[in-house]
Image 1: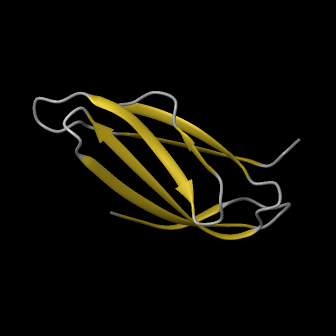
Image 2: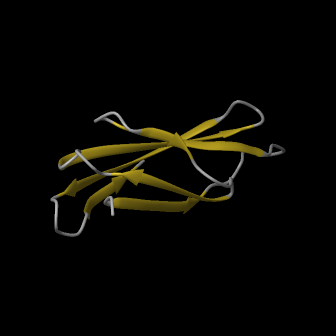
Amino acid sequence: TSPQLTMSGTAQPGSNASLNKVVWFSDRGPSGTATGTSSWQAAMDLTGFAGAHKIVFNAYDSKNNIVTKTIDLSYVPSSKVSITNGSS
């Protein structure tokens, strides 16, 4: 079984707008589009990506507003992923 990181969260659109999508990317290469919008979920395969990661999440609404959140995490094979901080 491949090591998977499941990420989830909530997002709110700007005033008089609807939420279009949530996308994520890692400073180490992997990226994707989350399933869902206001309540979203995404998975990242960590195979071959041991070490530190910065994961950036961007939520886009129908008025082209973007909200960005970032987390730092560290993955050591055969251990748990630890999130060391979250920031906006």
